[in-house]
Image 1 (tube, one colour):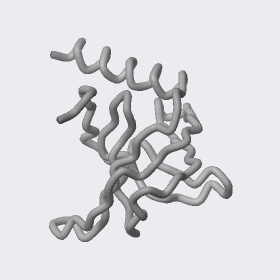
Image 2 (tube, rainbow, N blue to C red; image 1 turned 180 degrees about the horizontal axis):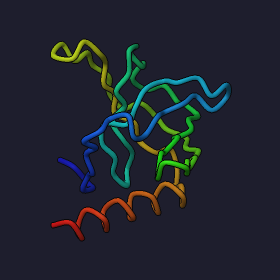
Image 3 (cartoon, rainbow, N blue to C red; image 1 turned 120 degrees about the vertical axis):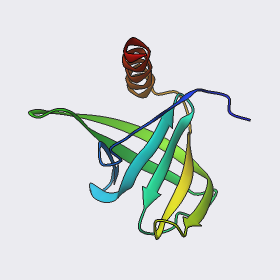
Length: 113
């Protein structure tokens, strides 16, 4: 059972997920919540692995925001419908910038409803 409401992105390329050590693209965030996010990638991520990631968020045409997060992969599986992999990433500690971003997304979503 989910502990947090999640925001699903219609455009999965909105939030890019990079490895923090070299800014290499790992994948994209499919949905996001206060507890973490679902990673969509071309390669599997091992469950239990700890990762230092950077979220690259396109906020407007001329603005990009970066949020550094430490996560633990909770689960990983192949998605045969889309020929890619999905992984559940849980925050490995509090991240104020991440929480503010999720709060902003939730507020924007509520305003549209």
